[in-house]
Image (cartoon, rainbow over all chains, first blue to last red; front, side):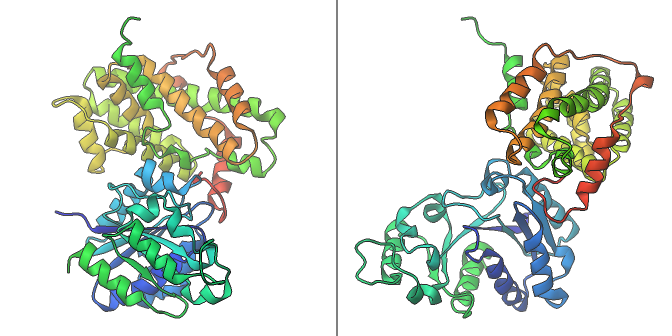
Length: 215
Length: 223
């Protein structure tokens, strides 16, 4: 029997990984998909607790949200030695064979983060505009290898300074970020969105359905 | 230079921190001892000696030796009895579970030859018929890789790394001091063999620390 589809979500601290899950799950659930969540936190189970509160039992049973303390660099727990996450995902799948997909949130990490193919079948890397519009052109495995790149907090672009020397704007330059994404990952999708303003989330759902769930 | 024995290389491989045991998530109660100021730098040697003498050498290592003998005898019933005994003897819940998970990960990363006690027992672990505690699985692996009694070194080393590395990650000691500790602890190390009735694991300070640690909401390590 094929295993439940596992989607890894990684990115720096504060880019919006937890909020992305909180926005995705109700939409996926409304479409009839059954979702489980593994949330890695380096120092607590705070994200798992937060999701349980915010999503509530009407959207997802709290037993389907599993928090994991990694104690070490987040990329170790999802790539170098993902045994702990693989075990947790296997356990979740065993207890809930009805699941269609498991979302695995990495702890906040740097641009070299990737997921082990043993752990995740589809990999989303996330950054945000406020941490610098030069991030995409800097590259890094996360940006280059992710099946889907998400750039969050585009609503903040007018309020932060550009970090690209040849930008013609004084504030974060979304046009250059789009160009950079085209250059760095020409065959893979990138979505610019604002979780706060709830834009672009349906596009993410569509890509997950098309490229990860194949339905 | 003459060829390095395959057994030696395998012993290094299964003891290396890159080997996927998932043990980097565990501090064996050390995080709580640090929080309680019981692992100050001048006491670290003493504390680690306690772990070494009262837990790893006196119990886990002995379980390993008995399990190795059971593996040689193809005695699955004895392996299962030892496994359950080891499981029941780990008083702190997360310590018990993490030892079990480490065993599961070790079994999962190892290909046993067909028609061996190793492959049969691995199947029992996977189907939940055996706990699969780390010392038991390590014995099966040591047998499979012809490492045999030397596998006890791996057991001591992996446990030592867990605790010392946690001290570095908790910023209690620096990386060079950690190497001093490692060097001192493994130089001239002996692997004593005890009789079955002498088996015990008695280290209340670690058990209590582990149990208190389980209740913390903010922490780096599982136990």
